[in-house]
Structures are given as structure tokens and as C-alpha cells.
Length: 128
Image (tube, rainbow, N blue to C red; front, side):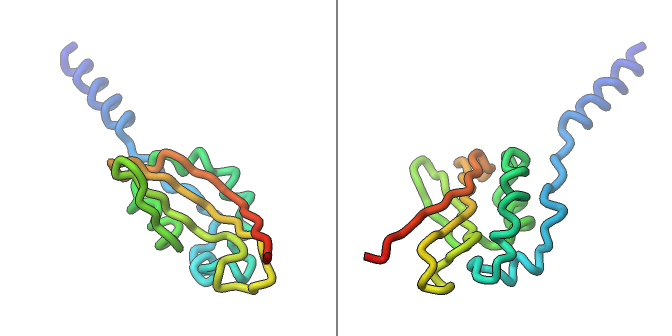
């Protein structure tokens, strides 16, 4: 009886501690990397995929996010040892200067290095 309980407990422990699998399987990493500043349109085309998987991107470590999306375009340090990773999706500063709309993916990491907020943001800039 003790052995059955121990086996059941071990199974529950192993299944409960199983690491989440990485998401965004449909993302072509080489095309994503080649569109580093969102100038070629591939990253913009992936906005729906990212929007659909926003909740799935939560609770990953910084290292896991970098393995999925590569090195971010920008990193910002904020209060309490937290940080943002910012990936430009459209209209980065290296692209056409006539485009005044910038869309980016922003992931917020807690002080332990796990994602806790995922946003897709769009900013419009006037040229005045």
C-alpha cells in the first residue's frame, strides 16, 4: 500500500513540475531574425500569432524567451529589478522614415527573470 502511494505521489510530483513546452511553433525563426527591425514585414505579419499566444508566453524565463524570439531590440530596466524586453514588429527606427507608426511586442520580467506581462503596443508619432 505504501509503495502504491509513493508511486502515485512521485507521478503527481513529476507531472505537476513538468516544464511548459515552448510556444510559437509556427514562427519561422530565421525570417523573424532577418526582419530584426520590422522593416521587411514578416514580424508585422506575425502580430496575430503573437496576440493569440500572449497568455502562453507568460511564466517563461528570459533565457527561454530569447531561445524563442532571439535577442530583443531593446532592454529597459525598471523598478525592483524588473525589466522589459522589446521586440520591434513594425516601423523601427532603421526603417523608412516616412512611417510614423511603431508596433512592438513588450515582455515584462519579474525580479526572478520570468515573464509576467506580454503586450503588443502601437505608437503613432507626428512629424512636427
